[in-house]
Length: 632
Image 1 (cartoon, helix red, strand yellow):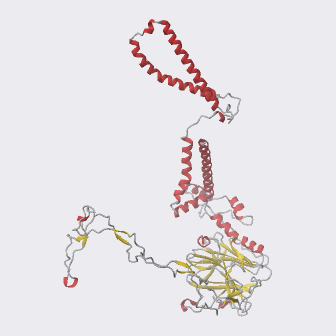
Image 2 (cartoon, rainbow, N blue to C red):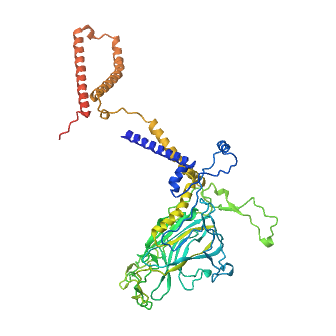
């Protein structure tokens, strides 16, 4: 069984190694540059136009260039250039902006100042620009770029018409790329509430908004905001409601320097979804998953209620009937000298632990009037190094068996315990119930009001609609194209593994063990194992004659018997050697000699018959073909 198990394990390891090597070869082949047809079919799709001519940056005749390229070192994998086509809005929409016109004609830069801060940083003087991404895989795909660090930025644009929350959902989506990473700052968008006095020139942090949505990060706190301002139907005041924090890990979206698509979906049934790259990372309901809750509690604690002076909140008290025992000694020390201790032999009572350094010399600039009398520094006494100790010997302390400490009465249940006091509940005078928080205040503009310690934050393809399929089409034409181009430009698996190993050298150990360990196990199990002769039960049923179990075991018994006889023969020869020098009386009597020989032959025959019967019974008992059911 063990042999079969090892064989199975070896076969499994062979398959694993073959699979790993195959994947590695496939990855290396992909890293050397995918074919143009594969890129068109698998990455760009039918709507993507891949140029056939790749700019190699080498002047001269094409044939000479090919020959020179073969002799030169291997070049990096060629990345196909994609002819970018700006997405076109289709279907019902309220706002669509791809920035491919290259201008900010429809956008308004804020000229306002923030209140309650220093004049030097109060202005919204952060710079905005419309340009390509730094490492763009789609030439011609422009976007809005936040250019300044440590500045206040504010820019906004009007919708085609105000969005009114009625019976259709709200879908908001846009793209963000932290091109240089993000230390501390946001990339969220505000949907500005429609009001008579809305002035985009004066857009500031206190401008009323209906929804704030998008990524925000400072330090190691990665956020994806969803905040809406809810209007109290009784007082008319607005209060911010924050969605619960996503359970998903958001770190990658801030650090990978890729373009990510952020999508918010609000439904008339009060449910919401937050998606990143068309994957849901947060979802819930406006009634149950916001903080603070949309609807206040029906009852609140009475602010005028106070705890009575005689209210007893102590569940346990000291037993008033408890009396300290007469033999309780509170003054007994916790530890006492060990009376059984004995001073070690060789203890130097007259030697101090430290002595003055005999090699120390008083500094020449030592002034006894100013510095006092000079004393040599103390050093360990060399005489104590070989001794068990120096100085006055004292017995070590041990725990005092009579120590009990300070006596305290036992604790018992408080018969007057009334529980923890809480104010009584009264009806909440501010209670209301809004079962449709989706019906928020209409908004008529979008705006980015940001402070960031990082620059070159790239925004693109803002879109607002009430049709899910329309938003999906816009995302496919815009972000989908970016994703395909970025995916085509990514290195193969082997290159990614090498890059990761350069950043984390310990990965080389993992790679070596992944490949070398299976090979070593294969060599050990396949090359060092012993071959085991198959049992009779393992033979397949064929026409070829197979050796019988009984015959094989009988032959083995005969070989053992011959070995025993060979071992006994030298002893018999030694015993018969002295008798060879003397002639026994048996030689003079042939009749007696014949009788003795006949008796010896009969005894040998009886022994042979008995051993044969025993061997036959043993073989029959052990043979699987003659095994019988034991009867009780």
